[in-house]
Image 1 (tube, protein in one colour):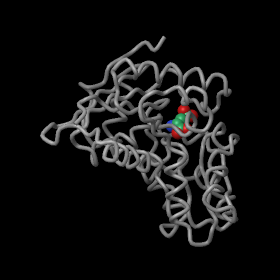
Image 2: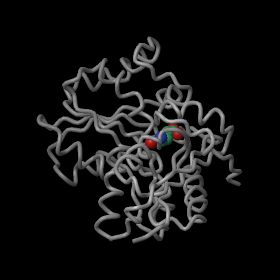
Image 3: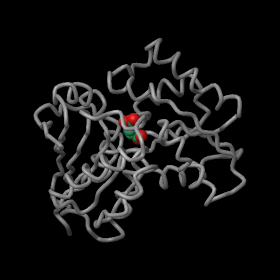
Image 4: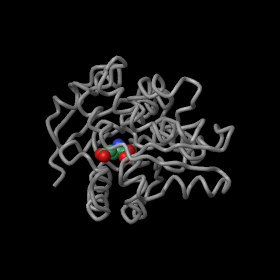
Length: 268
Ligand code: DGL
């Protein structure tokens, strides 16, 4: 038994797709979340800046003596290799578990990846999928505007503008005839209902936040570091900008009011 919390971070609200999974599937675990909303987005920045931000985010979570740290961020997982390599506790990123799920799901060996510019330029998903099967055709599209849609809560299924933007981004994937799409940025699962409306329910969408959350569960069980089964887990949310902006949208994304659990932190 290990009572220490799980630390999860992202540039902002995206990582809540992983938090949702952890709260549902690991109900005895405490979570410390860090959303770097003051410095989001990450996905349009240089490798050097992303490495620096990831290093600081990890150092912040290490102060809480976390038993596992998760980069619930496709951009950090794809680009910040150096920062990630220094984590001393069990670590979960999103590229490996999401790629494994996509390889399992595809029937026609054509997988699409929607990600931030940094993620798509890194080729991380292509590289990871090739480790499973070199014959799978992977087509990536950078979708930077989708991060802003989520950060501004433009995620309702009848949002006309969100739908038009998504339609544009999905065009190359539709032309390729992919049957599976990795939502390679953790912000995107929050837009999954609109993405499905546009591309069709028959296309499998892989939720990076969900896959990373389930990977964390697998590690806690295999390393026997779960919390006490009688303990009711809780989460605290640290953000590097106005907590009110964050919690207003987080309430919708998580389906529960977290306003009194959101705290400001000056990451510097
Ligand atoms: N949610 C992050 C990702 O998975 C970062 C998005 C951003 O800040 O650009 O890539």
